[in-house]
Structure formats: C-alpha cells, structure tokens
Length: 299
Image (cartoon, rainbow, N blue to C red; front, side, top):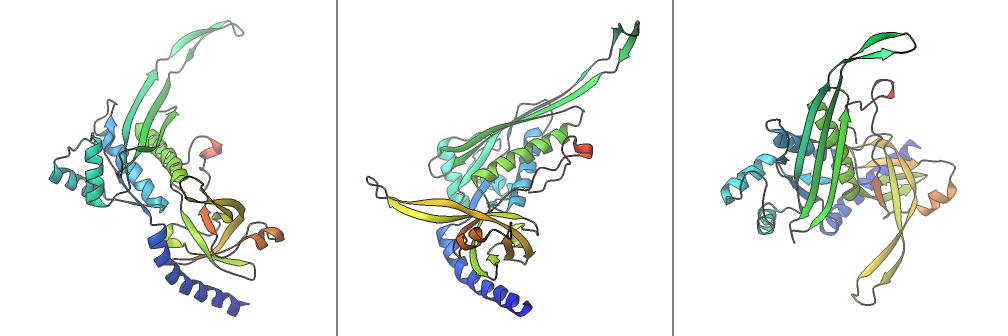
C-alpha cells in the first residue's frame, strides 16, 4: 500500500511539471495592487494601515499575486500619479501596464470609537436608584472596489462594517479587513486541478506553497457539457459539482486528498483527473465562549 502511495505522489509530481506550463498559459494567477484607502476617519494614517492589513490577508490567500505596496509607491512617484490613491481611468490602465497588474483594489475606510456615559436609573422592583456603567462601541466601515486595469471598469465592490463593544479601533479594523478579504476570495478563489487518482486517493496540484493544510476541503467541479453561443461563437462550458475532497497529506506543490464521505461511491466515480478543485475557506473562528472573533487570520 505504501509503495502504491509513493507511486501516486511521484506520478503526480511529474504531471504537475507538465500541467504547470498549461496553467501558466491557460489560467495565470491574478495580480493585484492595493492602493492606500481614502481615510474618512479621525485617525491618522488609517487609510494606509487599512491597506497594509488587507494586503497581508490577501497574501495569505495565495489565490492571487499581491504586488508589494512599496513597489506601487515607487511607480506612483516615478509616474507622478499621486500618492493618495485617487487616480482616474487613464492612470489605472497606465499603472496596470507598468506593473503587469490585473486589478487595483481601492476604496475608503471610516471608523469611530465612542463611549456612552454612565447613568442612574430607577429600579422599580427594588424601589431604588441604581448606577449603570457606560458602554463602549467601536465601528469600522470598509468600502472597497476592484478595478480591471484593462478597461478601468469596477468588477467587484462591497462594503463591510464591523461593530465591537470595546474601544479597540485597530482590532475592529483588522476584523473588517479579514471579512472583506474573505469576500474577495469568492471572486478570486484558489483553484487547482486533479492531476492523478488511484485507490480512492486524489492528487491536487496545490500544496503548502499555496497555504494548503491537512483537513482543508476542496470542492470539485467537472465539465458536464459544452455549447457554442449562436451569436458570439464563444464556447460555454457547463460545470457541475462532483463532490468534496478532504486533504490528508500535504507537500510543497501538491496534496493528497480523499472523498469527504468515504462511503459515497458515486462521488468517487464522478471525480476525474482534469477536474477543477477550489479550496473552501475555513470558518471564521469565534472568540472565547463563542463571542466575537478569535483574531486569527485563517483562510
């Protein structure tokens, strides 16, 4: 059994070398630049801090290539595009061409932390005045949009608001950035391919280099049929969900997975080499006693 397993891995590695060239030409990773956000808050450098936080989380996704913000700043300075991130359509396409970008992420951030003062109230049941402590409330709102640098059009946009009952503005910003990046992932997911299947085990061309860990779940999509658009001539591929795979072992550039439900014979039959495998995001971890967010940037 172990010998067969090693053969699966070695064969998978060989196929990975072959398939990498195909992927490089067919489905290259999207390249994104994150601009400094417009700061609508009272906090100094909040737009820059928000952009750095978003950049760090986007990098963890591994579903896209994130350009260093220092490199963005350098090109901005050289091209006199302005360092605030307020650029027009012509500047978007110019910047994208210089850095080979697919998208620019821009937008604004607002945030505020307020404290409601304490007050007395009359407790009728106890027939007395009682003191109620003041409450704290911190809110951060991120408004983001992805711009296609080829045509200057907005291809994705969203607004994320986080409210916590404390005075930690940085914590609220971190959570809002994390939630926003999870939404971006739905637009640009991490996708690989099944490159080998044997004895109920499947080799996917994604590994630790792509932030894949044991226990991760991949949704597998198969091409069920194709049709040609009668007007444009475009080939339309109809896809269906073939099932889910759970990662059992991970290497640098590949992982080994099995059908999530080992008794589902139909799923085993449906999943074939060449099928696309999209990594599902981990659940957002809750804090102590299930309250709030844990603060872990897990994807």
